[in-house]
Image 1 (cartoon, rainbow, N blue to C red):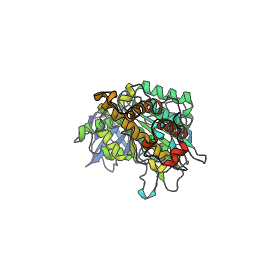
Image 2 (image 1 turned 180 degrees about the vertical axis):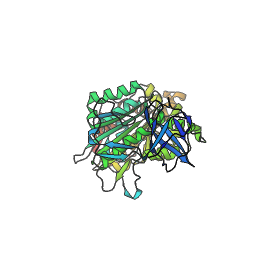
Image 3 (image 1 turned 90 degrees about the vertical axis):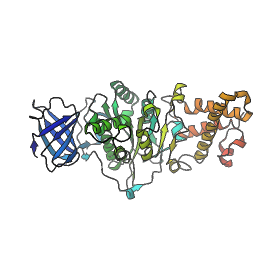
Image 4 (image 1 turned 120 degrees about the horizontal axis):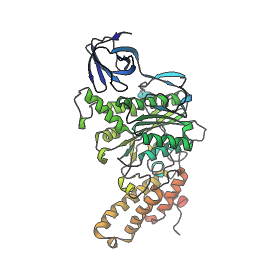
Length: 458
C-alpha cells in the first residue's frame, strides 16, 4: 500500500490527490492529519493520475502539504452477524447503543452483488402491515419495493414505526421475520423517537436500526441505506429470514448526492440534481427481491418527502419509475386529523394481484378493493359538485355516495397508531361500508361474494 503526500485541493467533503496509480472506484482510504489524527474516506472518482477522495467526516485540520493519504486496496465492507438483531448503529455501521462491537460472521461489500434478472423469482406472498389502506387497497408483496410519498410535516415517521412494529409475513408455515430500519439525515429528536418506540414496544428484538443524524457528514447519508440493505441481504439469503427494509428519508439521501456532485463541479441535471441520480437510486431500490432457490426475501419500504408536495419533483418522479407503485400521504386528510393520512386515489401497488386472492388473503379481496376505490372516488367528485350547486341539488344515490366518502375516511382510513388490523378485519370493515350502497351499485364484486360476505343494511 502506497502512501501519498500529494493533496492538491480541498473542496467541501472532497480531497483531491494527484500522482496516484492503480486506484479503484469506491476504494477505502486512510487519511493521516498533520496532528496525527486518522480519518477514513472513499475514492469517488479517478482519472489520469488524479483521485477524488470523499471524507467520512469534516475536512477540518487537513492541509495540502503535510496530510498523508493511504489507499487500502479494498471497498467498504460491513461485518454482519445475527447478533445485529436488537442493536442500534450509526450511519457508518458502528454501535451507538453502548453495546459491544459485533463479532462478524462474514464481511460483505456494502454495494452488494448485482442480481442476474434470470435468478429473480416472482414476488407472490402477502405481507400484512396491519394498516387497512395498504393491506386492502395497495397490498405489499414479499420482494416488492413500494415507496411512501409524503410531504413536510406529515406523520410519515409515525407511519414508518407502526409498519415496522406491526409488519408480519402471513404464511401457514412458521418463518423468521425481521425489520431493518435505516434513518437518513434525521434530527436528534426523531432519532430519540425511533429508539424509544422500538424499545418500548419490544419491536427492537427483531429489528436492526441504522441512524444517520442531520449533523453527521453528508457523505454518510450515501452509505447508510447500503449498510441496511447489506444487512438485509445477509439475513435473507444466508439466514433464510423474511426481511422488511424501511428507509426514511430518501429526499435527504438525494440532497447529499446533489451536494457532493456540486462539490465535484459536475454539470447539474434537473433542478440541480446529478444526471446519474436515476442510476444511483436504482442501485438501492433494485436490491429488493426474491431469488430462486432462496427461502429469504428482501422487501423495501422507502419513504421520501416531496419538496413542495410536488409529485413531479425529480426525486419522486424517478422513484416512481424504478419502484412498483407508491403510497401517497394526503395533506387534506392530515388537516382533518385522520391518521394515517393515506390518500388511496393516487396510490398504486403494481404487484398487488400476485399476493392476493384465494389461499393468500381472501377470494373477495380484489373485488372489495376495486368497489371501495370506485365508491370513494365517486364520493370525492360529488363533494366538489356539492360545493358548487349545493347538496340539495344532488340525487338520493349521490347523497349516499357523499356519506360513504365521509364514513370511508373516518372508519376505514382512520386508525390508531397502535391499531393492528388483520386482513380479515379489514375486508369485513370494507363490506360493512359497502352495505351503505344498494346492490345495483356493486358492479365490481361478484354476485356470489355479495351473497356470502355482505351484511344487509338493517
